Structure formats: C-alpha cells, structure tokens
Length: 88
Image 1 (spheres, rainbow, N blue to C red):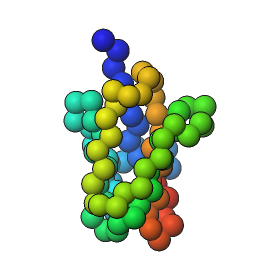
Image 2: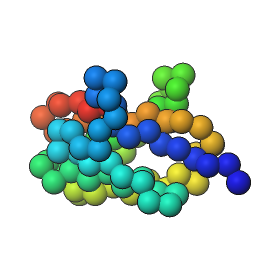
Image 3: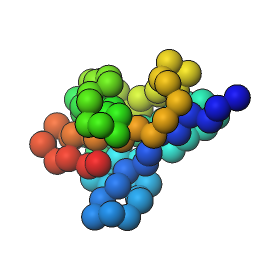
C-alpha cells in the first residue's frame, strides 16, 4: 500500500511541530491539528502545485483529518489563527 504523507508546519524552511499556537501531529492515517490559544482558526490543504484541495474552519481546539480521502502524495498545510497569523 502506498503511504499518504501530509507535511507538517514549515516555517523559514525548517519543519516545526508547533508555531503560533498550532501543533500538528500524525497518527496512523490521521493528521491532528490542535490550537489551544485561539478558536475559529482556518486550515487549508494544498497540493504541491498550489491547488487548494480542502479547507476547514476549526470551531474547536482540535481538528482531525482522515488522510484516506486524499490521493497519495505530499500536501502542504496552512493554518490561520483568528487574529490573522499564518503558519505554513
């Protein structure tokens, strides 16, 4: 079976697990995004061509994304906090 990969937060070219209150982790076929600082955060998933694949509004402090619905590949995650801060 092909492995599905979702990129973590990339800030200044260095992969980070936590930035701007967001924590991104992967468990099995699920990516878990948490933000304990603010609510009403926006999460966007892009393919490597820059096409928006899916968008979520986090109304709670945790979002679980099932990777099974995505084709195999590498995806970028952008997280926006309610105060407009962006984490890639």
